[in-house]
Image (tube, rainbow, N blue to C red; front, side, top):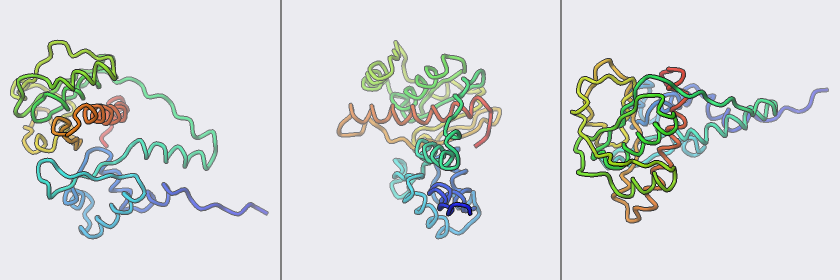
Length: 247
């Protein structure tokens, strides 16, 4: 007689619902507001909000207030939590399935990070992606209203936590990149998302809703948290760049 079957792991129960899977898939490529998710999945807002709440309760999705419009919230897929849940789900089926192959380093292509001042979030993201890929892809950053210089805590956290020296890097306006072709344009600021121009070649547009660490009451802690959050996002971006997939 066979053994009594176990209940499916929590990740399977959450993700197996067709609408929740579509929401997870939409959030895998970019942070979104509720009304954008409603349009993407073609379902009523009350239904979308209900399933987003279940995904938040399950720890797979988080939400944060928009720094552009405080009445809005951006939803974000916690990829580290998803990766751990998927690994646990695979191991529940068979222990050997827990192992994962290391991702290859991407080559070629081009990624542009955009924020408001190009003094903190976008240059940190630029430096981290260049560091993670060993300079094997073209990466740049720019701002919609660039500051005069990089924030000193951005320089400090990259040097202290990642061993990256930004040297004499200075903020620049996105106008300096007019006509340049990128494969991905990633806004890391809610305000910049609304003002980011179109670039030739129809690059893939993505948004990461990252609060400005310079406005925090504890900048040193905030910059460390921001750099760690960006590094996590970039680690999960690498397989996308390697395989050329469109999440």
